[in-house]
Length: 345
Image 1 (tube, rainbow, N blue to C red):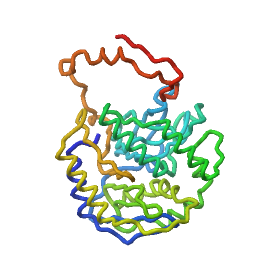
Image 2 (image 1 turned 90 degrees about the vertical axis):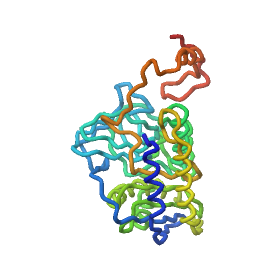
Image 3 (image 1 turned 135 degrees about the vertical axis):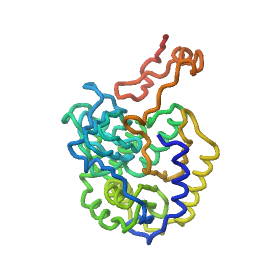
Image 4 (image 1 turned 180 degrees about the vertical axis):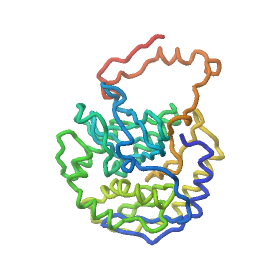
């Protein structure tokens, strides 16, 4: 999980990035951010890890918001926020960036991007070549940040993600029997390939600021040029999806002002201190900025030990249990048609 220790280095780095010449493709504008001297970490992407990494359902029955990852590689594997995973009971995307330690097993937080399927297509997931649509990804990130502050969990609003995927499929006239985001990317594969070529990384690039029709939609920052070059095709697909069928062309806003705003916000985070369970309070604005420099979750020794019983607030668990909450359907989303649960411990 990101902590206050990871905020200061990112804030300092943002102030030293060199802003490159804008790249354009249709309604999209990408501002390359350069730091050519950043050292390369010895990490693999999911696509590079291949058969050494197995991602599957947490059980035979499965759970919508969680998957299991086993890393048998001899190096850490980086899973990107929003990265698509295809297969098993239904396609998913990552709710946050995860660095899985070598020889580690980890439970990872995910959201579904295929609402109409809950049946197996193979036991394991394959890496997709895309990520969640940028606008939906920004909303998902805001929901996950709120969940971290309130509950210490990387939980999204699954219903909102389904609605965002369905809206994009409908707006772009994509037929999908299962409401799968993957069907959009298959339909527009050539358009997205053209965008990837036009917006290919520049030498020394470690980050990108992205605007659509003159409005910021996001920023991604990785540790080094080599890792950014290998991860960008999937991230670029999520941004490029926002430009499909749009012809509006407008210059991007001032990138220096945007970078200063993010750096200033990170400094305020550090001054305010940590939120629940030690999680740093997150900066959020339209077009969420995502730093993949240090992972939100790690396998192995990175897990935090549970608090001792004597450290917990007395009576808190019992009060919560009696209150209960809205019952949940099998897909993990609150269903208002079901009766409220009353749990007594």
